[in-house]
Image 1 (cartoon, rainbow, N blue to C red):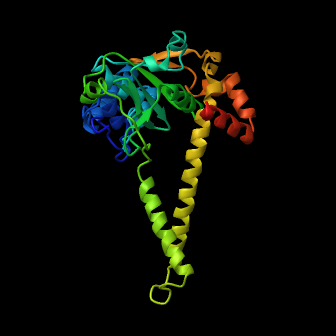
Image 2 (image 1 turned 90 degrees about the vertical axis):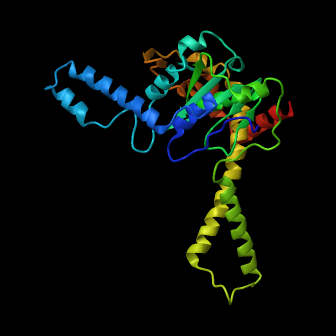
Image 3 (image 1 turned 180 degrees about the horizontal axis):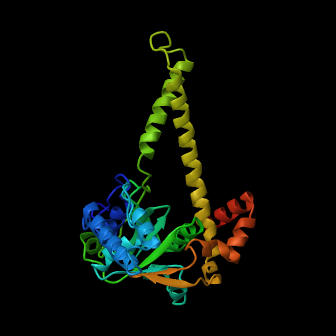
Length: 312
């Protein structure tokens, strides 16, 4: 696992982390991606100028902020597409009619990149195994071949746009090592900051326990704001545990959703090297019969299906 390059989240530079984790190295910096974004902005400006620099449309365009980047570090799909184009790589929308007509098993692909609400992350095969290289995780997360299809279906249901990576990825150390050996992961990585929150919560619980026993009450009075913070951290930890359980539940029930994406046939367009449908990638997962069936299930039925899946 140590051979896998995994760039962790810094600020809002998830597009940079997504690309570097995909390519398995420090290939792009914020300056590199900003340069590509400025180039795209200039190309768009020149196209708008063809209609006349005195036109209202052109003046309005100049007043609008860039659609390819912002001050927070976000970069658009066009920037990512152009960056990958340098390496001869192409993006194809996973939910597009063109791709779905190929009926390709996801485990036979090389990599995917996913986007939701301006967050980008990579899922990549290294050797014969799949890994979730989300920069928000403390490390790479091993994904089994069986679980990959469930994971992608879950992401679609949650509204993610998923893109298939086509082309030859650059060679990397992890690919060579994992090509001759397989890894096992005893404990999956947690979200960055989750361990700190749990640690703080544990300390808060210990302090509250001491207060209940009357230890240190006279020498160390407790500030009300600090006590409220401890309680909030404890509740946050409980919420995280519930979210983990619900995440497992959603993953398990996605078996019933496979093939649902075929029920929607959205129109398509192409921007740069990216083939994009006219409908959001995540809508297909909920738009078919599988999605309607999932919505109708009760919580108890979902739990039974989850248990049956894990029993198998």
